[in-house]
Image (cartoon, rainbow, N blue to C red; front, side, top):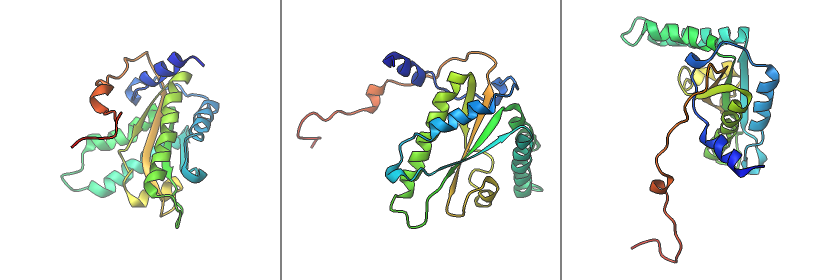
Length: 199
């Protein structure tokens, strides 16, 4: 493996939103490969806490209707209800090829702290986000919609002790998009090379 290819892959990862999807549907076999890559994320005590639910074809409509209806139930008749947001929840998912709901399973009594399980699932998501462009897919991790509603967990096949971490939106991209920008890593790192870390 060429190290520079790995460096380039990581640097070129970026969030790509449904407005930049063609509407073309990717093969399910590609999504399975992304999920297989997710399955190789690091996991303390091999708990493998990631749980995924994939929406595609007519399932995208179910996803859209569920989120929009939950929003309507929460805000209808109040100043918080925005028709534009309601319509966006109904239509944005339909521009995708697939949407993957991200769950964290934390077994009752597990010796692994929940935060470590969340970190493991986040690593699994990163594997998907890094893999998607290799297959010509744009992707982004959304924590909007019903992500933080406790009652939404059951819809996504999660147990009461589990957590929903959001959704990965996937679609074939219209065009090559510019890479993200980052400040210098040197601004965010301290090196300790001796026996003292400061006064």
